[in-house]
Length: 295
Length: 335
Image 1 (tube, rainbow over the protein chains, first blue to last red):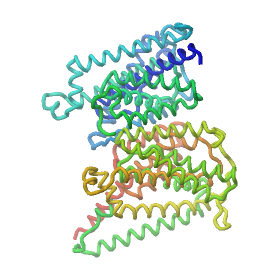
Image 2: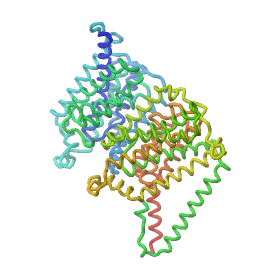
Image 3: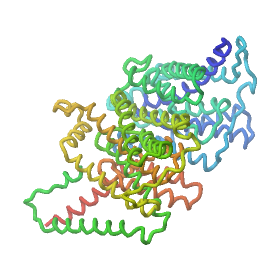
């Protein structure tokens, strides 16, 4: 195995890792704010990517506006999901299972809807910096992938600041940690949950916009993306915002290096085996202290 | 669960209750007559659909039992369904072994895998367990595709012989219909009995108050593993029957969407009632067909039904029916 090949697959793994990290970040945001594992995080990305594509191709607006449109579409979807579907379920005494099934159901509906409206075609967005690549020691990486890594890192930092430095971020955390306590000091708990879904949707939409120049968007992409993102979030620890990035990059690197030694068809088997093993062996992830119940 | 809630002290006036019971037997007899006569008047495609309802009832029963009695969300049933089907397909076509061998090997492999995987994985709970089983389903789907020396990959395995019961070849949907439903009903009855046994009580205790159950001497983890293995056996059985029925199996039938369908069936039917599984299985086979007349949008409508059911019928059709029957009986019991 040559050094270049190794470096090349490490770079590919790093890129994939940040994709998983972005999806995982959205899952972690929603889990932190509502204690719901959102099985439709990948669909936020699907809708974000599709919306960006439509703005770009049908309205022929510039890429920056298309990206904003995609992110906004994810946010609106998250907001509507909470308002129209999660809230009524909660009023009727939703359990963990019912929220999981609800978000799975919405994921199907969206996937089927995208299939109905846009068909089976895969679509690609143009990346930042077009098709150009950067060369490191004979190994190439798309310029867009570097932007993806930079933007993901920035988003992670902003989220950390949001949750630790802003009034509304702290209120959101309080609402999820102690519902009654938060309500008694004047925090509007249902509104904080809605905002959490909005934020998760925005992150998901951003993921879609950033991913679609690298991975084609098509109606079936959501579920696997959700699972990989979930693996990333779990791997790093759901409670720590840096967790998703550490987990995502680890997952991406292991996946792409493992593919060097076994057939690439087994890539998902490796990722899913890691997911299961991590949940059993490291229930709090690599960075988490006390992240979750269960396990 | 329902049966216990409805047990009425004997001091109440008996006559309205007895008439209600007669009526219930009347309904059962009418349903049985309808079931037995269906192949006479229904079209071949309708019977074909009902055969699938029967197969899904068997596999879904395992999922519903895990969910309703143990509170475990399993998305891995497609794996066991696939193992059953591929065992039958491989043993009957490659080795030319008789059908029972295929059934036995499928059930054996499924039970062994469920035991080996379930032992560590069932230490998890809630979302994490659900997603671990979903990960298993994905692993299963990939392996079914990649191990093409065994499964035929995307091309599949064809030419699986029809089942032959004492010289009577089950070569039409009508004939298979009369096999699959009695098997399904037998399994439903066995599960009902299991629910009423000590083990059944232990399961519900574990579901509702795990700590209290442990104090009373229930080995929660072992019990969960046992039910998981039982569920896998049902999945493999349904898979073997499926392989004999359609005589061709390919990886398309054992994907993650099938696993999700089995879970939907359990949730829609109402996992706490054994009978709900049948309603759920009928729903997920009949509904897409009814909706398909609306054209390509039927998948969206089906997902919409699912979302509505999760929000408005948290106990599923079985739970809703049970509540309706209870209300009816309460009205009748009023002097």
